Amino acid sequence: MKRFLPALGALVLVAAVVGAVVWQRPEASSEAIAAGDVVLQHSDGSLLWRSGQPETPLVQQVLRELGTVGTSLDQLRAAGGALVVTTIDSKAQAGATEVIRQLAAARPASITAVDPANGSVRAYAPGLDPAADHAGGVVRAAGDATRPFGSVALMRAAGVPESAEVGGRRTDLLATGEALLRPLDVATAYATFAAEGMHHETHFVTHVTEAGGKTLYRAATASRPALGLDPGRSKEFAARVTEELRADPLCGDHPEAACLPVEVKDGDVVRHAWMIGYTPRLAVVVFVGADSSVEVQGRPVTATGLPNDVLRAFRSKLTTW
Image 1: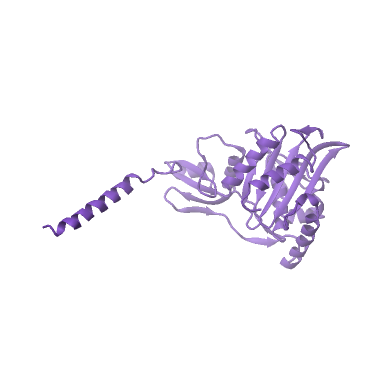
Image 2: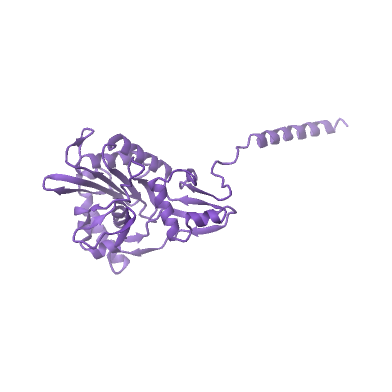
């Protein structure tokens, strides 16, 4: 009997350890899907939104995309609920929102960042007003932001749509003499330059799974040459543009960064400004609206002033650029 006591003691110890592990197991994630619930996650699995919460402009963009691929919010609820994994990087998103709050809270402003390698939207900070979307819900004169493309046809090939839903109605973007673009469109187009002339469809959703785990939708990853008849010519065109834009001193000392400051004016008055920057890893567009070129929080609303400050501050928040 004695020879069994050590073994029995060991079993008791193992049972105690196992019991402790079981009792210390974390509770079910707050993102668990209840019946009829729809949960949106950041790309790292952290909670972005769940049904019943207020729909921010970012959430509305995600839900709008779900509707276009046949998995609308109502359909997902009727199917018993679903988990939607988005392309949004939680750290980049938090950093973009913080930068706008710190530097551009007094103006309509946005930061939009797209991954050139696959078209995924990594950050979408449309401003601080939850009722306004200054990244994808407004159109503004593009000014010289269209100059590197040379033609409407190339802008269309780089992913800029003919029209978009803005303020509840379809709005022409490329039909007039002066292109009217959303910051999201500008980021999409310049991501094509960053990807060496290859265009990937810009998207907010990576995949959707039902409550039982079945995959309902997964974003396509196909690409196509956008700036020429073949990948070689498209790559050459993109390389020429990138080389020219890298010469701008605003790009700083980053060897791969290209940038383009753009101001749109009425006479001598700045209406709004863009600051565009990209590397092979990320294309970022900063938009700042202005009624005049007066200073905001100590910086003028010109492309080389406040928008450039916003871009530089956002870059400092990124793990890679």
